[in-house]
Amino acid sequence: MCLLKVEDVYKSYGDFMVLRGISFQLEKGEIKVIIGPSGTGKSTLLRCLNGLTSPDKGKIWIDGVEVTDPKTNINKIRSNIGFVFQSFNLFAHLTALDNVCIGLVKVKGMKKSEARLLAMEELRRVGLEDKAGAYPAELSGGQQQRVSIARALAMNPKLILFDEPTSALDPELIGEVLNVMIDLAKGGMTMLVVSHEIGFCRAVADEILFLDEGKIIEKGHPSVLLTNPSYKRTKEFLHKIIELYGEERD
Amino acid sequence: MTGFFDFALTYLPVLFEGTIVTLEIWAWCMLGGTILGLFLGLGRVYGNKSIYALSTGYIELFRGTPMLAQILFVYFGLPEINILLSPIVAASIALGMNTAAYQAEYFRGAIRSIEAGQVEAARALGMTQTQVISNIVLPQALRRVIPQWSNEAILLLKYSSIAFVIGVPELMARAQMIGYSTFRFFDAFLLAAFIYLMITSILAQCLHMLDKRVSVLPRAG
Figure 1: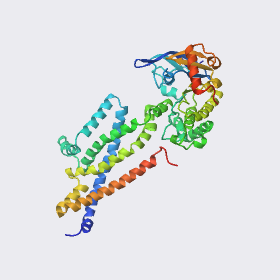
Figure 2: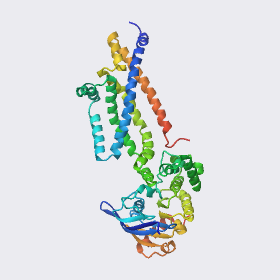
Figure 3: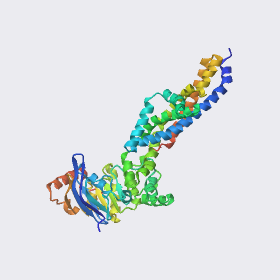
Figure 4: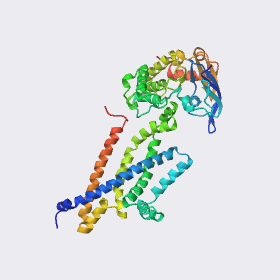
């Protein structure tokens, strides 16, 4: 059974229709990357998946539970889905360790001592155990994003959503975050990633979805879609991002 | 005519008694005003339509009428509906309700200043609205509100002198009494002013230290 199922999702902000009938599925252990020009609804789509935004029409299921059903306990669902934001969004008043702990303690009801052990484990996984006591303001962007990945991982999620996790980073900090994400991918994590990192797509993506004007206009394996896209829009877009980001990184 | 220092030595004990009363009123109205102000501020940000309207109405009423009118109303007006209060209690209530209105706006501003992204991140972890407010928003908002709150704390210490119109024997009332009995108003008010200045300086210093101590934003070194 698929872990995530999206069926004909529509969303408008005022008169502007952002999503115009999105459907796709994600199997357990699968990694899909969403690419597309800005303003085409990539972030809105991710936000619909964990209920930060409600779609106007359409249905979304996660692990068999309908997210879009108003009777569903959305907090329970969210605690099973990791979300990594473009701007990290760490809690500024908490140390790196407590940022990772807080969900475990407050949402999962874990004892503080247990949560700290687990959180330390996750910080080690992203290579930041020596920064456990640092506040977000004392960390670089790349380190903050790695803490935010650790925060998501600690909840033991079924799926992690990444919303342009490297777009707010200085170029020299992107690699450390991508490496953590590639390790996760190789470890079998189910991931849905909005990103324009072509190197990352090639390395781990099972499928790339090209989103334009609120619709998935093309999808396929990176080896096919990146080298030989069928649509002119896709070709133009890929040309632009390769010009901007370079063909490969890492 | 004796010198200023002899005068001060004779009457400072009386003024200190008044100072205790001033501090008492101040402590009660800051305590009550902060708690009420926090709830009003939360009501303005998170309340439904009626809670929002209620909080807003309260704030407008207490900011829009003179503090002197409020204190006279509580002490002289309420007895007509059989609510009799001692002068100190009446003063504490009136000043507390007044400062709550101002503090509510400071709390509202501080709550609103917390980045929406942090709130979303907390929601994305599965926290309920209440958990987000108590674990993410308030710990930061309460830190950020300290400078404005300090202002209000210092203002209120001085505003508490208004309690003398309903006969509370606080610092200003004592100074005036000393003035009438000695005809040395200048010296009496000078001493009172000096005491206010001492307390507000100490208070400002303490609040500044508190602000520094709880700050988690970029620290030097």
